Image (cartoon, rainbow, N blue to C red; front, top):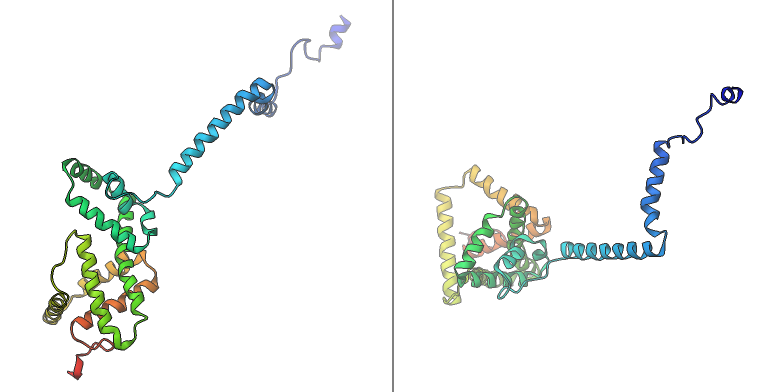
Length: 266
């Protein structure tokens, strides 16, 4: 009986003390991390699995994160071409001349598309929502602003005595760009287009005198230029384009470009 009494306060022989949670976690981690590498066979299998996973992950990351290459507007699918021009940031990284050329090619293709392309295009347009709509606004706004700024930047280098001729040339070029983007060709001679634009500018000025723009209309115009379009351009761009467009209107109205007053002091 003495031995039993002496060992009464000790654990029964053969019963193992349970592991603590920390020790169990360490054992589990050791099994997961080091277990697959303990033998040559395990190392070969684990290495093959790891290499395959790395390759798959790398390919997925490349296909997902890589910049989308410029599509072939004549041969690639319509959804890819439209998606690139309207819904991808990469479009804005192209030089302005390439963007204008791509848009012109898209317009030509739209004019010649068949029924299947029409259905695809309708489905594509219906899916433009949320972030896609914001990207669409950014791409179109930057295209318009960058086109005007391209000419406005050149205008800052023109001598005062040459500005009228430059503004006439710039107006003709803008009409040609607009026609190309609309899939049209202009047959009118240069002087006829300028004369028509001058007449329209004079009519607009008279109409503005008779019916001045309300504060609400002015606010909407300011919001569009400074908010909707302006948020996708720099302050320097907005400043150059504002001066350029103001002087073009003055030139078409026959006003002094520097002052905005009628020529001859009238």
